[in-house]
Length: 377
Image (cartoon, rainbow, N blue to C red; front, side):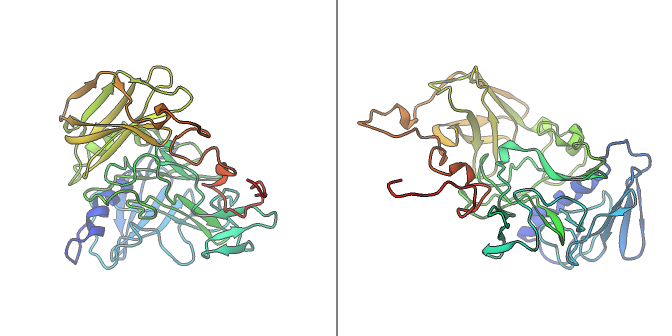
C-alpha cells in the first residue's frame, strides 16, 4: 500500500496489518485450489480459490465486497469494511492484497449474544445500550472477553462462519486483562472489530509501530485454521517480509521455574512490558511454571498478577534468539500477606465478591438479572 499524504499515526498502525489480513483470506475448511486476482478498473478482485472472492477499492483500500460460495456478506447500512475506520483517499497497489475488519450484511448471523440486539429494543444509555422486553440489556460494549482469554471471535451460521483472529497485541496498550469492542449486530447488519488501540479506560500510554498482523478468516463453520490462530505460531507472518515485523529468530523467550507464595485459589499471569511492547503468559495452576514467548529484545518490567492484581515486579532483559530461564520468583507485593485487624474478602484486582459483580462486564446496572439492592447492603 502507498499513500498520497505524509505518514500519520493511522498509516503506521494499519499499512502492514492490512497486508497480512488479505493473505489469510483463503483460510477455509478446505484447501485453496487457485489463488489469484484481477483488476476491474475500480477494484482489485481477489479469488482465493476456496469459495471466497473479495474486492478492494483502488481509491481508499475499502473492502467493498466479499462473496463466499455465492453469498455476499459485505454491507452494513451502506458502509464498507476497512482498516482503522477507513484510510480515506489513498493510492492502493497490490502484491499481497489488502482487506480489513468487516461490516456484514443483515439477516445472516444471529443476534442472541450479549453484544447484539434488536432494532425494536429500547435505548437506555448513550444510544448504544439497549433493554429488551424481558429487562435484560445488550450493547456492543458487552463482549465480556479479556484479551488473554481469546485468540479469535466472530459470527457463525449453518452456511458459513466469519472470524477475526486477533493480533499478538504487542503494540497495543492495556495489558492482558483489558476488554475491547469485538462485535455487534442487529437486524440491520453486523460488525467485527480488531482494535489496534482502544483508548477507552486505557491504563497506559499508546504504543506505536506495526500493529498486527491480524486475520479475517471465512470457513464453512469450523474454527480458523491453527496455522494462523495459534498465538505462538508466526511462521506465516515471518514469510511476508512486512516492514516493522521482527521474525521469530529475532525474538526471545522467558521460561519460569515457578512462583513461590502463590494463593492456590487464584490464577496467576506473568507479563512483561516496556514503552515499546507487551507480552504475557499464564502460570500453571499446579506448579506455578510459566512461559512467555515471542518477545522483542530489550529491557522489560516483569509483573506477576494474582487474578488481575499486580503482586510482584522486577526488571529483566530479553536477548534475540535466546531463552531466558528464571529461577523461582518469590511474590513480595500481595496485600493479603499483610497483617490486618479485620478484612472482608481478598484482593485480586477485580470486583469479584461484590453484589452483582458477575454482571459488570456484560450487562447494564439496570439489567433484570441483577439482584435488588436493599437497605443495609
